[in-house]
Image 1 (cartoon, one colour):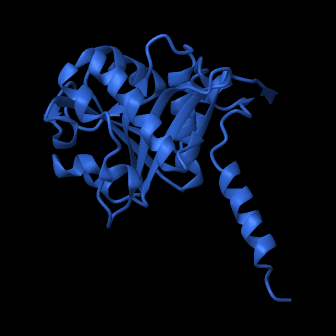
Image 2 (cartoon, rainbow, N blue to C red; image 1 turned 180 degrees about the vertical axis):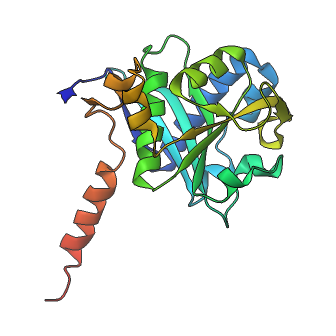
Image 3 (cartoon, rainbow, N blue to C red; image 1 turned 45 degrees about the vertical axis):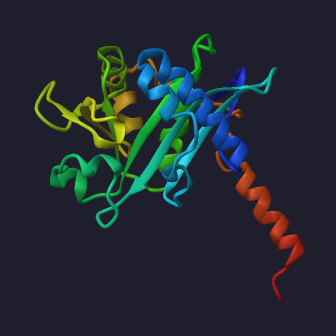
Length: 226
């Protein structure tokens, strides 16, 4: 396995300042295409602070500026995803652990690898949390093509779109991705993204380093009794 450095880092948001930075990127990216959403997304919302939610934040190494973000909600048979308030998922999805990516945004002019790195970080986050299926709602044809190329499949009828309440009521195509089978599927198909997604270690994707360091600090301050 090779190792490759990126021009940015991807970490989980750990404080209010991180959430504010993520919100600014969302407002900038979504507001560029849908101006009405810009002001709505300019501040973190209640979902950002939920325990089952992971907010990924991509920061440029040189400037420290936030250049990308994505939000991953973990669900299971007893805890519904946001999009499930707008549609009923088929049993092959609803009966398993699942996650939904929302608020995926990359600032204009950002490193071209930022979007793919956010997806890889989301994939690794799902693996670490034993998620079977990743579910998304995609609106633009360009984004749908990107997800289909990654291996996402239609949840509903081909090209059927559903208005999503948590996405401004705009119609979205619902796609799902088998997290558990992804590596062997990419390898079997000789997928062009396999080297980046699986066969390259990216030390700048630092999803759990802060957690481990915090835990170590707690253990030093409060050592377990022998």
